[in-house]
Structure formats: structure tokens, C-alpha cells
Length: 226
Image 1 (tube, rainbow, N blue to C red):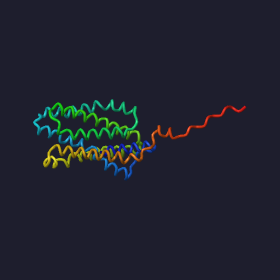
Image 2: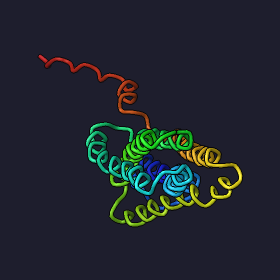
Image 3: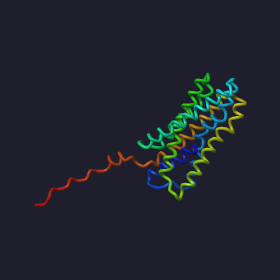
Image 4: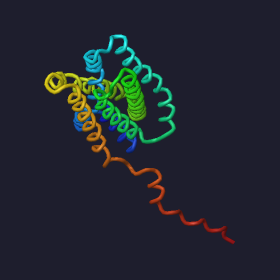
């Protein structure tokens, strides 16, 4: 998703001590990363239709989506507390979105309202962690002069990802069914997430531990002169 790309820019800015700002390269990376949110667009758009076609009542479909929303909400404060105490924001984003993509691929294969509700809740949890990590990275790396542009790009990226997971998959469902469509959405999500993460991997600064290990020890201080 583009959020991975935006947060990747933030992570790079933090590692090099520079704030996030506009750039053509950054815009291209955001575009490449837009696919990371495609699974979420597929879930929000087509999960209700899948439930209806399987004979689930509107009440049950509402419970499934409501469980996702409640867990998504409840997970954000604990996720923020944990992320504040650990480094590597991009790692949380990439792992969370990759897990969401794999969970999306499983949606059409889950049988029963209870199992579908549990899967939706799990998706809500991993997406919550990713979104919190993205927000933290952007808040740390942006400046007052660039914050509006960065957040505007971030929110634009969200809906680009939703569109990638919604518009192309209707014809896929019509011709090949729900498993193929949710699988395509998951593949787009994994490609977007992993591609964007790979774009930033070579630019990461050495870790503090690595720097400390590579720095030669200072010579001992000589005693006082007599």
C-alpha cells in the first residue's frame, strides 16, 4: 500500500536525520506501494457480498464487520504503547500488512459465521498495528512545513489502495469466483508491501549497535603527570 511507501520515506528520513519532504522519487515509491492496501479494499467491498451469497443474514454480516471494527479500535492503544517502546516502525508495517494480505486470501475458504468473524477480527488487529506504526513514523519524521503535504499524500494513498482492491475485482468474481478475486487482492497486497520495503532496505542507516561495535575504543587516559 502506499502507506508502506509513505512510512518508508519516514523511516528513511529518521535514519538519516532528515524530515520527510516531497520528491518525485518518493511519489513513485508511494505509487508502487499502493498495492499494500488492496486486500483491505477487497474485504470492505466484497466480504458483505460473499456473506450474502453464502446465505448469511444482514445481521450476521454486520456482526462480522463490526467485530473487525471493534478489534481494530481496541488494538490501537496497546499497539501504540508497544510501538513507543520498540524501534523498527517499518517492520511492524510490513509484517502487519503482509499478514493482512494472507488473511484476505483465506476469507473465501473459511466456512461458518463464527470462523469468518474470528478471521475478520484478526484482520482488524493486524491492520490496526500497521496503521499505528505508519502514523508514528510520519509524526516523527515530518515537520510543520511538510506535515500537511505528507498527511495529504498518506490519506490519498489509503484510498488508492482501496480502489486497487475494489474496482478490478468485480469482473474477476464474475468470471472466476471469490477465491480467485481475494487471492488476486492478496497477491497485489504482498507485492506492493514487499516491493516498497525492498526499495528502502538499501537506504537504512546502520543500527546503533552496529555503529558502536565498529567504533574503535578510545585509548585509556594516562595518569596524572608527576
